[in-house]
Length: 159
Image 1: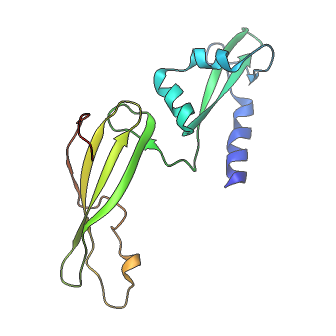
Image 2 (image 1 turned 30 degrees about the vertical axis):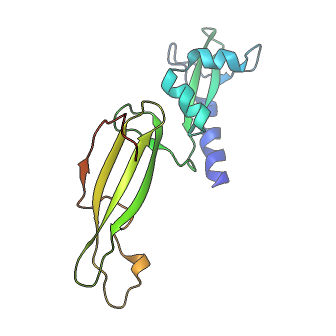
């Protein structure tokens, strides 16, 4: 929640400089958002644009250098892309075959990266229904248990 994020951010106040090891401070003097953008890779710029990660510029008073900290946004709908590693991929789950009391069901997860345009379709199984349990508590319905990947990088394919 909000407190967890506040504790996470407050934990960054004691970060050490990667160059000299001294404690860094939040960079505030004559530092603009443009200065932060100069540090970020294209992947990180996309993460910032989508809101999947935030970045804080840090300053080392000992060696007078600036660096940054990457902080994932925990409530984000984005996940790490299996192709480029950026936190810019979305997943959409669809049940393709409903489970019954006799047989397992099947689902498909469409994965799309908003940075590298990687697309994938992952097939997964959904556990059989059990008497005495509601269908909404059927395990495996949201995951990839027993699944296989069909697709790979197919940037030109639309789902």
